[in-house]
Amino acid sequence: MFNTLNQTTYLDDQGHSIEAAKVDFIAPYQYGFDGFYKWQCGSCKFERATRSCGWSIAGQVLECESCHKRNLLVKTNCTEIDECIGMKNRLEVEIAELKHNQDKFQTHLKYAVAQKLAPLSTVIDGLLRDFRESEGKV
Ligand SMILES: [Zn+2]
Image (cartoon, rainbow, N blue to C red; front, side):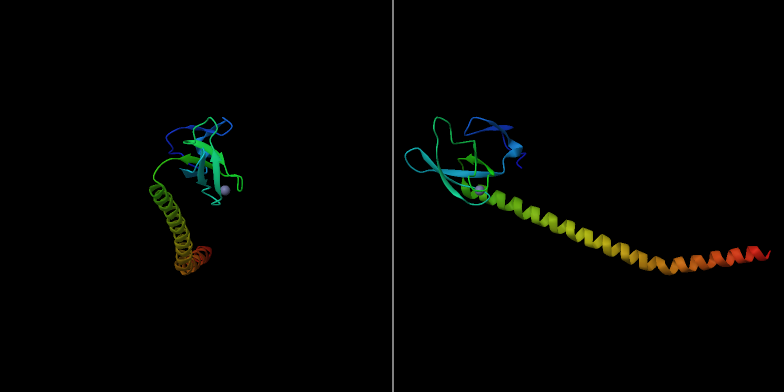
């Protein structure tokens, strides 16, 4: 999903390499207590507390237990991330609406052109018929 992440691969909690393109969501985390970090799945909003055992929580890809989407845990400003993701989602909706309107316009245009050409087609057919008849008489 994310092709603009800084790294091309990340690690999951098992130490497996995960391609950046296979990361589904960015999930900001907060330190809780006793080595536990609170984070929320970007897809289903399932809240979790994960304890990092010998690995860094930052830049870790964790799969949501609930929806199985891959979340990249990041330590940064949550508001800015939310705004960026919100802006991206709004742009995707606007692009889909523009595409829908473009399709509607093209369908309407094809229909309008066909309606305008229909009488011309009748005239041309008549002229061709008259021409063929006149050639037959000669
Ligand atoms: Zn989830």
